[in-house]
Image 1 (cartoon, rainbow, N blue to C red):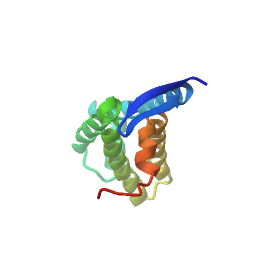
Image 2 (image 1 turned 45 degrees about the horizontal axis):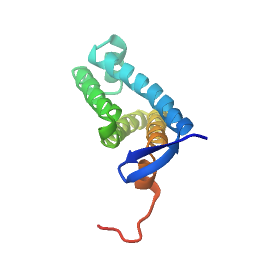
Image 3 (image 1 turned 90 degrees about the horizontal axis):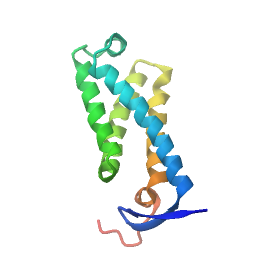
Length: 142
């Protein structure tokens, strides 16, 4: 198996090419899905306006929601900002989950799954993410 050394937030770590590509593929599909969702909102297509008002939000918020989603997504795509973007998208998807739960829509699990896939793709591409999420320090600085 071929390994590549990457510079992550926690230092140099080695990951396989297949792992990195798996992360890129999962992340790519996720980015395409979220970009399509944001574009539908920014363009104020009927499906987005109707869906948003059905959830109890005013129609004038559709464009704002699309722009917020797009900004978070751009941050996720930029390698140096990917962790910050993932955190922002987690908040955005958390709001989507809460909205779906409030209206008792069984599809509330979709934003949860998207968030899980987003973090999994980031972890596959950057081993530093695993260190940030799962490693424990014997001497925490905080």
